[in-house]
Structures are given as structure tokens and as C-alpha cells.
Image 1 (tube, rainbow, N blue to C red):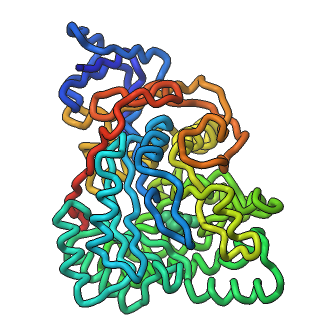
Image 2 (image 1 turned 60 degrees about the horizontal axis):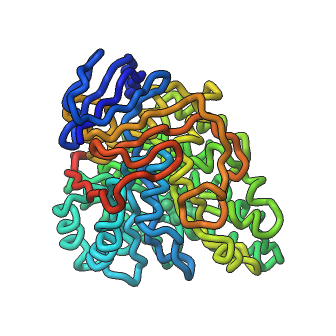
Image 3 (image 1 turned 120 degrees about the horizontal axis):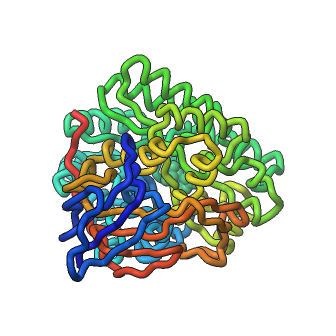
Length: 459
Ligand code: URP
Ligand code: ZN
Ligand code: ZN
């Protein structure tokens, strides 16, 4: 059924105007003032609302075997949560461990998502080792429409890659025009510090941050940037959390390295005192890089508003309280991750836009447009324009509520942002012209999501 969104304030990364949007056959076909309402058309009155392009989360984990357990969501639960929160596309990390075959893993991850996601999706392909067959396997995966890799400097012996392998992965990416996303923490330093802390009897979640201090992330970021510089590859630092790491990335950018930066919502709105809470309350807030000293939040928000941090993702990675308690005897056994796919857009709007730290255009750019541009989805996704997919978010800035596990759609028994105020919420969310969520509830078609094929663009 065609869709007409009337009289909204349409906000893109670089424009703002009042008007109507008409979508037919999955894409936006007309925009203008006072468009006629054709018979049989579904109409949304967006008076008093913003109309944003569908938001894109470029860093999520859904199927994830990790730290002796599995992340909790399915593609159905995660995509429904995403849509309710205004996210219409996500890019999942396909993460084989060093013991697993890359191509088999890619097919496994794809099969988990196929027919189960209610919104559109793609994958970043992790390169966790580099062997004789890696190049041909990665070429095949790129031919299948995956134009970004992922590497981990952290998680020694599991996802973590050695320097020689890193060089080879980046050299191949350079040839293929693929961008490489990277978790930048020095694995060796983390391992040494963890051991020292545990030997000293420091076992609680409050010791997670000291085991991976800011300097360890700054070193990892500098390390990755130096490898980019010497291979000429394009790189994207995921979940950058602190000033030292930001300085390392920006220094590299200044000397001409092709590097972009992602912040994630937990680092923007939570700080390390959450992980210092006693027992499981602290464990719920263990992720890597860790929640940091609060002074970093202002640094990250300033860089975000200035466009020096490019995107805001989630690093969505849900483990429930039973799983978190696997680490009751040692913080190194707490499954790392904080879910956020449902909360990201509303948190960024509430603590960014509503608090005057982020203007509306940068908000749209950081949460949608720039990810679309960096990862080969623009202008199909990431903007509101004739010819683009009709992925739209009719957003009510006057809504007032609270983030709580009691109303969430993610498959988890806690919410890392429990009790925080929500000022603004999606009133309607469409995927390729079909309404999939309204006012905090999923109202759409399960399994509607499609795999987004992306061509390499970083030559
Ligand atoms: O704590 C985190 N970030 N968990 C997910 C895995 C990763 O490092 O992205
Ligand atoms: Zn990571
Ligand atoms: Zn991650």
C-alpha cells in the first residue's frame, strides 16, 4: 500500500524543511508541499513531528559465541527492538574465532539472519587469522556484497589477530577497496594487567576498567593507525571511548591516514561508576573498552558535534544476569557487552539534541547518514530523497518516558540504562514504505528485512 507522510519537519544531515513524503513500491517517489492523497493510501499526520531518515546501527552483535556463552538475541528479537527504537538497518559483526573457518562462518551468520530480521541488515566480516585460504575466502565474501572487514587487536587467542596477519588483511583490503573496522586495545597489555590484578585479589567488576586503561586503548588506536598508514588501507575505529584514543586517531587523520571514528552510546551516557556498583549491578555494565571516567563524555560529545567522531553505534551485545554472574569469581570471566540497539536513537536525542550538545543535522548524520556513506549504503539509505528507500522515522520530540527493562523488546532481563529519562521517541518507523513500529511497539511484518549488498568504495 502506498504511504503518505504529511506535514512533517523533514531533517536530513544537511537540510530542514516542512513537507510531505510519498512512497510507493518501497522507495520515496515524491516529496513536496500539500501532496494529493491518492485513494487507498496510508496516511501519517506528522504535524509537530520530525521526519528523519531511518537510523543505521553500524556495529551490533546478535549471533555471537563469546566468552564461553552466546549473546542472547535472535535476529527476530534484535531487529524488532531496533525498529521500535527507530533503527531500520544494522550491520552485524560476523565474528569467527581463530579456530573457525571464515567462509563457513560467513554462511552460518547469514543463515541465522535470513528470513528472521524485521529490518534490513548487512555484515562486517571479521578476519581473526590469515592463512593460505584467507585471501580467496575474503574475495568470495566481498563478491557476495560485504565491503567491510573487522579486526580485533584485543581478545588474545580468540578473535585477536597478530601483527603479521593484520598487515596482510589491510593490504588485501586496500586492493579490494574494502574498509576495515577495528577494536583497538593492546591485547598483551590487557592480558598482563588482568593477571596482575587477579593475583592481587582484585576480582570484582570494578577492576575491569583498570585492566584496560585509557593508555591501552590509545596505544591500540595508534597501532592500528600506523598499520593503515603503511598499507594505505581505509580504517574505522569502533567504540572509541576516551580522549587519548581520540587524539591518536585525529593525529593520524591529520597526517593523511584514511581513518574514521565511531563512538557507542554506552560511552556517551554512562561512566565507570556504573561498573563499580556492587555485584551483578556492576557486571551488567562491563564491556570493552570499558566505561570510562566521566570527563571523557564531554570530549566525545564535542568531537561528535564537530564531526571528528563520525558515527554513533551501539556495540549491542546482550548477556543476561545469569551469564554476567559467570564472572562472580573473576572480572575476566564476565561476558563483555551492554545491549543498546533499542535505546541508541532515543538516548542520543535525549542526551545529545535535547541537552544542546548535538544539532539535529549532526544527530542524523552520526546516527544514519555517515554510516551509510562509509559503508556503501548511500543514498539508498541514510537520507530522505526521491529514489531512496522509504526507511523513515516520524519522531515525536515531545514524548516523555523512561528507559526500562519492563518495556523492552531485546531478549534480556535487564536494561543498562534503567530509569534514565527519555525525551523523544519514534511515533512511526517504516522499512521500505511499510510501517513496522508505532509508539514503542512492533506492528509490522517479521522477517521483512533483506541482506543489503554493498559494493567496495574505499579505493
Ligand atoms: O564488550 C564488548 N564490546 N562486547 C562485544 C565484543 C566487542 O568487543 O565488540
Ligand atoms: Zn569490540
Ligand atoms: Zn563489538
